[in-house]
Amino acid sequence: MKKLCLIAVVLFLSAGCGSYTSLVKYAEQPNDIYAKNDLKEYLKNNKSPKIVLRVPNSNDKATSNTINNQNNNVLFNAIEKELLKEGFNVRDRGLFNEIMDKSKSADYSKLGDETDTDLILEVVNLNTDISYSTNKITLVNNNGKGPDGSNVGTVDYKKNGATVEFRLIMVKNNEIAGNYKFNYNPCPSGCPLTDWNYNKRTRVLEPKETVTVNLLEQFITHCTQDLVSSIRS
Image 1 (cartoon, rainbow, N blue to C red):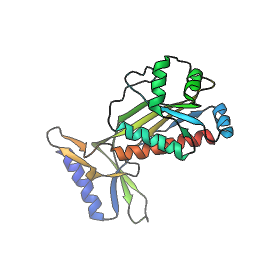
Image 2 (tube, rainbow, N blue to C red):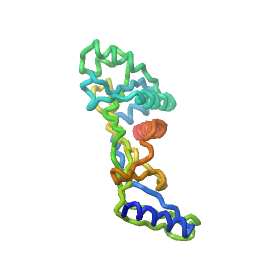
Image 3 (tube, one colour):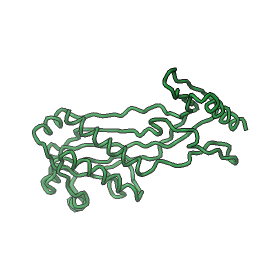
Image 4 (tube, rainbow, N blue to C red):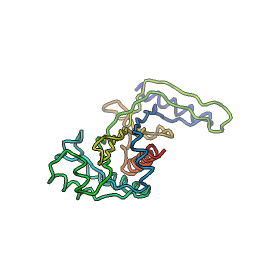
């Protein structure tokens, strides 16, 4: 009941003064991006390298976890689409995996010869169940004439974010040339309090919806753009 009262007070104050909007924002998690100079130099001399996307599956020991989600193909297709836009020559990942399974070789340089591939972009990890939580409400000044405020209470506003990790391999050198970790922060522009419902049985606030495929697709697209920028800078 106390939690419900707190929510009501915040909503009343916001509506009463009419000059503030109550939003929930989460602390942004930094991305981790590393690319070797050899890779950057290679891309300067090769404007349209041949690349294949390698994704996790239950039979793939080179990746760190298994993904079982029918929506993941949408995300993987978004990565390949963005790579094509950036000028890469994208190879068929299904054909690559088939050749790799038959080869049984861990030597990427040999696989490169067999598949005519220069680079392998591995999706090492994709987790769409990263929990974010805060009890802080940001009060945004609507007229822009005064400072924003905040209110810290006992109510926890929880939402799921996501994280994706890539590994970029230079096939000819048989070496890992880049490691990347990107974080999807929920409510980047702030979420209104109406995005949560109060569960009377459990006495906790529950988000009305989880991370949608469309939001993840946008996130994955931006990640791919940032990855390409980091190795071409």
